[in-house]
Image (cartoon, rainbow, N blue to C red):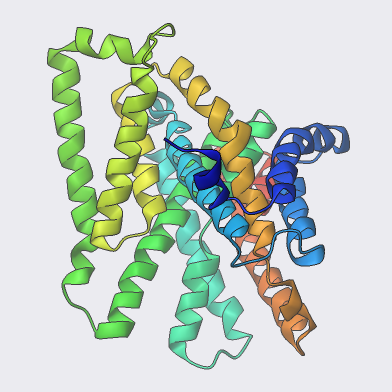
Length: 346
């Protein structure tokens, strides 16, 4: 049993915990009045209580506790990102959205190669890494922003999500392979990502077969009055199993979390009520803590070093350009110029 003494060994001071709780509740209210996504204020709030006021200092027990909550928030965010994919709509539209996403990702890579060449990188390895890194599209920002503006289910939202998924995990997979090749020239670690996808395919086969033959067994997962909340338990079980498999294979845990959510959404199509319950505690607390923790960990002191700001602005400028300009191709998919530019900026 956790008593006050053992809890005190984890939490050393009251102000950080009080501020995190108050911030998670009040920041969305303030963001709504300012017409900003709550993510923006959560990042700034973390910057304020972290590097600026030093209420939460890196390496302390309080910071480590918040980081654990934040890691769980990130995993839940990526899991729910998989839920956001409308597979029925994608199946009706065919391969068009996926081809669009893959095409844009290819253009991101090409534009990045030329763009980062202007910075005179020290080596081709550095140039390749920057191209892969900046060609990614952080689902952790894209999904909450689309949800907060009510656009995740729109045509623009779905095209943006599919493109972000392709870019995020295309980059993540390429970085894993690139890192292994640079570090050791190859080896069995190159099989880690294919092994993860093979595991996903096996789990998908088993889940679909089981759901087909025993549909009555799965009805309880979606019952709103289940006292044991088996739907929540099943979702989190799948999440942690895939995260564990990813860690065992040396693959980014967020990739496993996303695949778990996408797999669940693909097998069980009518999951709106379960998604609402999962989103309640995820977006209500854990995910905001993740964004606050990003602000807490921001290396503010490094901004004073010579050349850092100039280099940072150059990187940001190129990163924005290689997304915004190619995003205009979304006009060919029926979006307006404004919507296309909005997707590119996001």
